[in-house]
Image 1 (tube, one colour):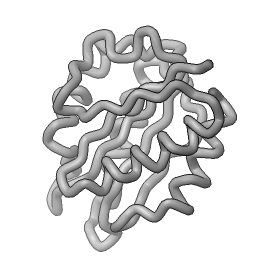
Image 2 (cartoon, one colour):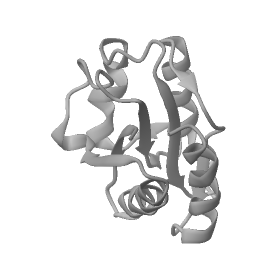
Image 3 (cartoon, helix red, strand yellow):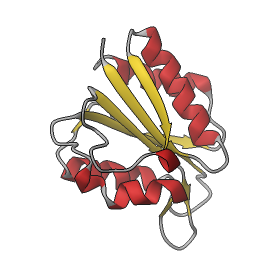
Length: 146
């Protein structure tokens, strides 16, 4: 049984909801899934002991890309997470009416790749309220790697 960690930063609850939908699909495929709020974890050693790590953050900001507040310390210290060679994927919620739609997702994905993570799926960018169908389809792609 694959051990999967899903870390999410969520202010309005949308990214947390998406994380739950993703977890449901992975559990259905036999994964042992742990969901953690970004506010409750530290980046150092974050990926050690997991077969797959999923990172989710909402995006804020008109002028610049802003990650969800609780996710910022993880992002800034992702070099200490131990991602080299670890399977990973990134997801998040945003609003396409803003100039940097899901920019946090792009930033996290880029930083994870720089740290040697093995991305198993293209990122999931959710526009507005999370819908189970769209999220489940992406999670099925990820599930092929558990």
